[in-house]
Length: 124
Image (spheres, rainbow, N blue to C red):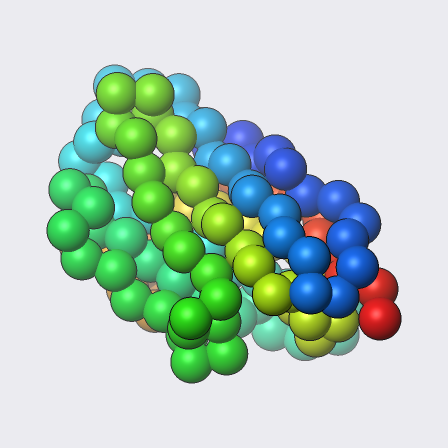
């Protein structure tokens, strides 16, 4: 069993930056891929980025490529999402999730554990 807790969300102006954290409990964090997804009211949850268990492989949605960076520190059982050059359309609740296969996926159905989400609001 893994519990994930996101933090770091908030209100920022367009062009600004935020760093989200996803802290995990449990001993198997280093075996899991981590993904970040986001959701706005009335819309489906959408893929943002994923990182493999080792950190060697990452995959980004086109909408955030070049602006967002995912990383992880397995010793701290924490994954990070550095978000730069934020746009109003990045406003959403951001969720981290763990994929027990270790490789990550763009499909949210592949993820077994989810955090409660953190709100990111980008003002224009």
